[in-house]
Length: 187
Image (tube, rainbow, N blue to C red; front, side, top):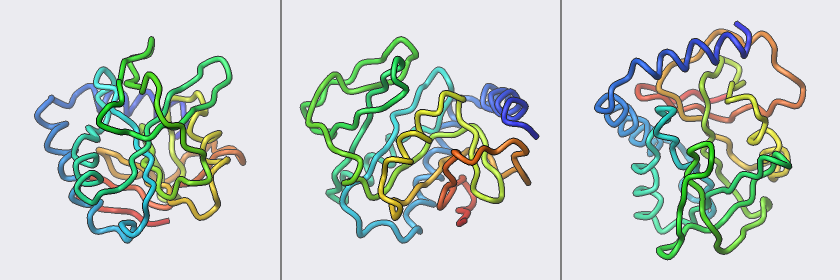
């Protein structure tokens, strides 16, 4: 399937999920994450869920990261440049939804891409090769291109993989892992 077809299909799949299902599936994903060999790192970048898009609730992962005393980074998107700026999440970080309902920090301590060791990546769909389909704006591909090559990229998905995304671009960044409620996939 093409990215466009997959976006339509998986947005519809998500729309069918109830709030309780989203919470249960999100908790299962966070429990699967505990099995990955990623916990010796210090700087973890995570997205804050867009509730209106029925994304994976990352609050459970935030609790794990906090409990393990990790440095947690969240982003602010610039829709004019297509880039993201990353901020350390602290007790005093103020978060506000932007015009696209993305929860973002208002300001804070900026952290450069070269410090980031693990990135939890939002997605709509992924394939058996580690390719992902997002919303199509390219924010994460641009961001991940500017991270160190050894930065671990982990997709979070309510659903299992497709066999293949037919229109992958050379500039698309592959995942190292994708974690679903029942299984983690390594690429």
